[in-house]
Amino acid sequence: MNQPAAFLENQLTWKDVLEAATRREGERSFLLRLVQFLCQQTGLAAAALYSKTEGGFERLVTTGSEAFPTSLATDDDLGYDSVLLPEGLLLYRPAEDGRLDLEGPLILALSSALGAAQLRGRLKQQNFAINYRGVELEALYDVGLAIASMLNLEQLGEEILLRAVSLLDARRGALYLRAGDRYVLDHTLGGDARQELPLEDPQVKALLDGKLPADQNFLPGARHLMGLPFGADGRPQGLLIVADKESRHGVGPFAVSDRRSLSLFANQAAIALETAHLHRQALEKERLERELELAADIQRRLLPTIFPRLKGFELAGWSRPARHVGGDYYDLLRIRNDRVAAVLADVSGKGMPAALMVSTVHSALRLLIDQVEVGPELVRRLNHHIAESSAPNKFITLLLAEVNPGSNEIRYVNAGHNPGLLVGSSGEVVELESGGLPLGLFDNGVYKAGSIALGVGDLVCIYSDGITESASPRDEEFGMSRFVDLLRSVRDRPLSDIVSTVDKAVSDFAGGLNQGDDQTLVLIRRTS
Image (cartoon, rainbow, N blue to C red; front, top):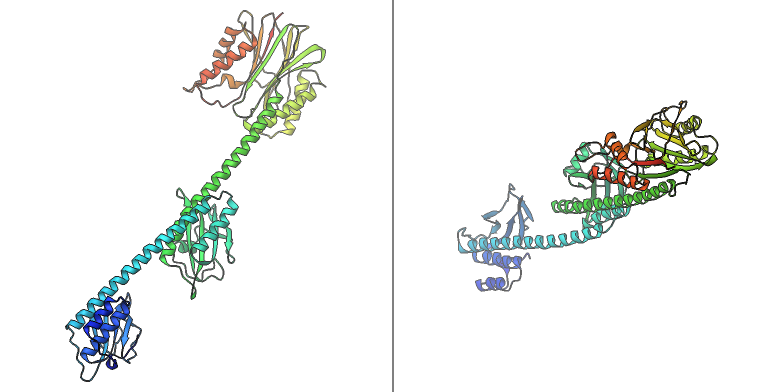
């Protein structure tokens, strides 16, 4: 656009200048016409029009043969005659007979044209920024949809990093996930990265504040870094770092708008990671529930479904675990000489560890009862087996009884369990006292047997403390006296009715509260 105004072949007129404006040849073309007309009318040899910038002035147009500088600082020694305009600067070199009226209409027209050009330029920049922002938000939306649909945590981390690098035209990147007091590298793209970054490292904090010098070695060899943390509900989850923004001129630093874009993307990444974590937890919970249901089914198979028939006696049992699997165990086994062994055991603790010990008791008891008669020696051997095969802090209370229809007696050993109850036909109650320590506490435990004769109509109840310690909404226990009174009131009913009555009474007392312990009953009644 550099044309010598003093030697134009065709002299310009106001009409030419105005036509240049109406033809919309462009801002610079119009301003050039106006400067040329100014030089022609005032006899200037050369002139240059500058627009105001943040740090000085940038040349827009020049006319004449003078080599005016392309940019100027506000404190530069200009070396030319000049006119300071509201939106810029006019430098000129007058001819010998040239004259410039600083307040003339041409200067006013030039000032107005430059101001209008500057305003239109700013409007264009704002429109571009708005349009770019729309495109950016649309891209972020598409990226958010893409990562939100991924539930595999390993694939999601890689996808998040790839999308972040692509979104910001970065050459490299790294994704870190928080582990305790540090960020641990999850994925990297385009080059190596440090394996761990301490949360409290001053250089990490500087990076997150956008103040990190380019030579910091987070991503070895990278020149320009930008990093942002991300998290959900105020809990930091990880750190995104991108490096070396690509452009037509190579790589360079990231703009302020890039940091805003990365921040928006990091929020979406945090939500996607949280969703994937919740999905994994849900799958793990579902798997555990399936395993617990399987364990519960296996444990139910350990309990008798058909009770042995014994001449002159009725037998029944019932158990309700507090969780999927329980720590209570009962059994009714037909043994030698046409007798029946009744056992009720209560394992310390709850859930799966207790259920595993129940299986141990079940297996050991069934093995030993074929070798040793029901009594102290059998319980001693059972205790030795439990002590060797269980953790030191685990123990089992147990009441083992043998029903002899020939003598109408019950011979029993109580290893730290609640005393069994004999409810006589007339309502009197006798306790089957303890005869030794719980199983598993000491390897050399000593046990003694007790026996009691049953009259016709006498009811023996062996129970676990989950029944007597059942809690009400008022934090009151069902208690021993309430249980004994209940047994007295139903002692003459069929055993199945007694079980149903105890079940209902305890459930009604709890008022819908989840109980913290398993509940088990074994009932024995002499009928003739």
